Image 1: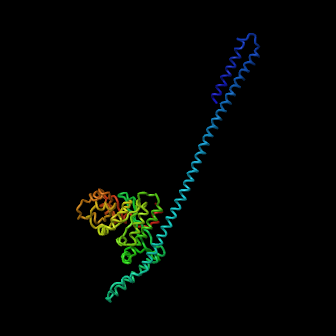
Image 2: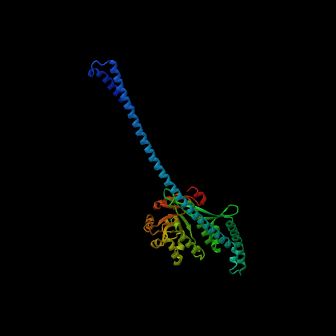
Image 3: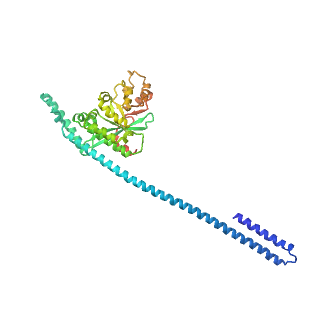
Length: 396
């Protein structure tokens, strides 16, 4: 606008100057004629100015239209690309959804089979198994009868708990120290009676071992843990879940081969699951068991050893058997009878790429002593007791 004003003032000055100069070039010209010529010159400049403005606006409009056309073409191309991507994603979703649904159906069938096995096994009372032995002593019979009654009550609770889906998965955190940030979880099974009261493993584990239930319960616990992992998806990629596998399960001819085959078929779970064995099982199980477990280790699964009663174990042998975690009790690591400096224990395991976890930490004073040893992983009631899995996974 300012430039147009200056241009108008310019040709107005030129017109006035020309009007004043016309008498110098044309003698005896009428003053009225000079004014008419000056006005005509001004109008000519105005006309030229208008033509210039029209052409400039036309070019500007053309440029704007061209830019809009280019933007429109870019958006059309982008829309076509998005439509192709949506189509591709839709096909992937349908394919993945079918695979996921098939996976869920297979797992539900497995769960149904497991529950059937447990109910079938629990249907045979503990008293029947005891009566298979020698019952000639009348005093023994009397004691056995009292024990059978209690055992049958627990079996009955477990039987109905399985039928009514009252076997729950509990998770206890494994934390980093001293920050106490949750890194992993250990899985436990809990049985509820018809009143909702929890029956702890200490009440039924021996009975489960004697009746052959424990391997199926291990399988059920593992299955529920896998369900949690499926729901977790790609979140918390470094979080792992520790599942205990009992010696009875390791030697169960029905459970163990199926367990190994199932894990090999689902090796994508290797980054999530850690199988835990007691030190006694690690040292006493036959080579054929470890040969089968080695097939899992080669597919990426890792193991943990707990219930450690002595530090006199071969670390290189553990590492070669795919052990990545070892759990020690505060009583063991703080013992005065150690053959190694406390601060060197963690370093010794680290040389073989194994992480040390101190479990059963229940007091702040114990934690202070553990931290003095340089331990950076802990587990125990001080950091959290086992909690129903649904209460945890909803916040992950």
